[in-house]
Length: 313
Image (tube, rainbow, N blue to C red; front, side, top):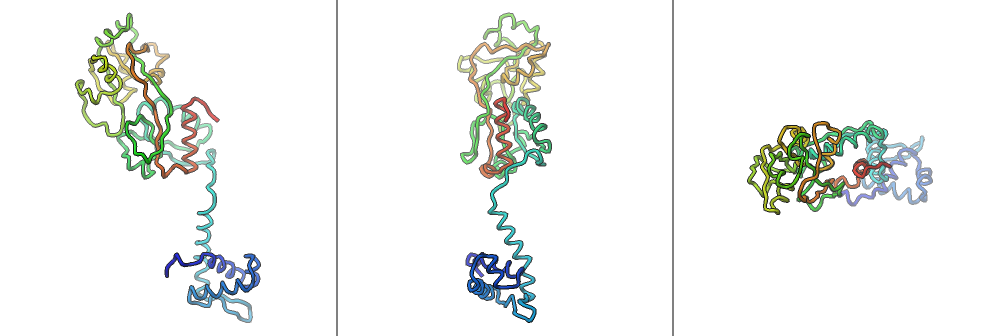
């Protein structure tokens, strides 16, 4: 049998007939005429090759085939009703759900703490599973196995949705007795020993070299435009580690300003602007088109954007 040729209305007729066991009452419940209901029963008998309901002294009695069909038909109709119902709004207060978020070290340090504060107040049953860029392949995101990406992206599949959360510049961290602080100009900056932090993008690769100008990133690209190069003595993939290294004598750490601001109350580290121009960058959120209309996902995206703007509903 070709299922596409089956009139689903017939299943509705059968469901009501098997409950009422009376053609006239079934017709009244469905708002159709008694002849139309009788015609429907005839078509049902042809469809299933069974009389389904037989007139006896006790009324219309279902056959064994009809009794076997009854729960199956009810399940089919219930599934269809559920499928065509409008999606319910997400109830954050009662939700018990895990959101898997790939976040760079930068995003994890600057955005996630504020997000957790809001979730504790509004959605205490939500759990965040924060993944590193190296843990995730774009295919995982595309298939909806990872809810969203929080990072800076040079390249992203066109099918993905994305929004900019904020724009950030750069600041320098130095220990408070660093001699360069007396007059922090470009020459003293270049004379220092520097900590490099990766862009923490997906697929950055392994192994870095101070002479690998094509991969060194924002800070070194800005210096290259001036025809200059800094002395990198440490490569790290973690901004928080870089911030800790800023306490070491003689080291200079150049990191995004929002991250540097986390140390504004430090008695060991000074925060100063870089002595040359470094173009700002954007933190973005990206997600699969498969999750675009998911109510829970929409709620979380909206909450992340509000936290990024520094506000709430």
